Length: 504
Image 1 (tube, rainbow, N blue to C red):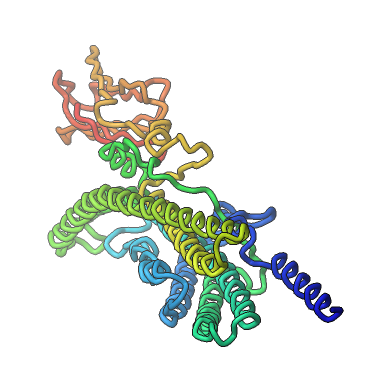
Image 2: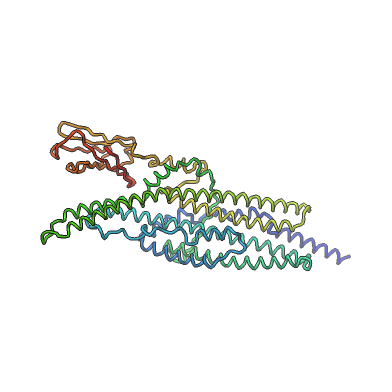
């Protein structure tokens, strides 16, 4: 009698201990909690600011990028996901080498065809080129940052799955070791596979963290704790987006395009410089004709490069918009699947606790819920990476503080969103002994200066940088015969560096 009472007490203690220690309790909160950050962690904005502060030498930054890229590529090549879910394999394949940085964004400005010492446009080209290169490297930094966040959560979810499998195995070995041998053996195999995969993901995570520090030129010993991001991106972000206006906005803010604008100006200036070099200190320059011809060819190439860059910027923003739309759709789909999978587990677990269903169903559905949660996390951060690519192509940092502010609403609030040639009109005022040209527009506050170029080259050019006078420039009769029908173009230079030409 005493022995039987003792057995009942021990059994009760075991049941209560088991129930208390069950990894199935509060699983939804446990998994979702991995996406919630804690204070004093470094977010992406801080990382980018740190990169801008430290990556002042773009050549060194690019070397760091190549080193980091190679290390991560090797780690990813050695990893073949087995158990953690098929989307991880797709994700690693998609970002295997990260998005390639355009070579022209990180190499030196082509100067061999220009007279560098006298060509002021090269300095501006170099300035925008450096800005474009930094944007490209910061974009890679963001993609790597989201990979780190993904793998941190995956490791925790693998630990949870192993915990569930161990818990199930322990119950089976205590209650039905012979009858359930096949399940026990299967669980052991799953645990081994998960542990092996965990090692691979952990090694990959360490390489990604090291790569981030390399990109930031930080000492490997510096601790960096990254902030998770549980803000869910919605497909509605892209609702009613005006693609034509989006392309215009991307172009007017593109550092890459501005680089090519000034390279074209540099080539034009070089033609004039060569044309004036017919005489040298030693006499007539017999190579003058060929040098002028080469300079004009270079100018033509520079102009074509400028036009092709404009087309690339316009097409790239649409490509990234479609990629983002696909990523947002995938993220919402996997979020729905994960929620349904978790609900199925919770329903089965509640029925088990009410003694209406055996616990086997809870174990089976819990493993499915954990794996679907992993796919949700991967899709979640893939969407954020796609958002970074879209933001870079648009040359605009979108805000997500108010989910009702979709891309269209945010862009409409920007000064350069809706700027076109139709917004500006050149006013020609014929006076008694002079002609005055000025700009008529309600967007003069965006303009830095205006250069008036006449179709008749004998008039030269006029320039004005005074907004108060509506960028008025005056040509006196002493400069040449003033005629009634002057024609040409006004090159409007905006404060953000973009240029627009208006005929008059």
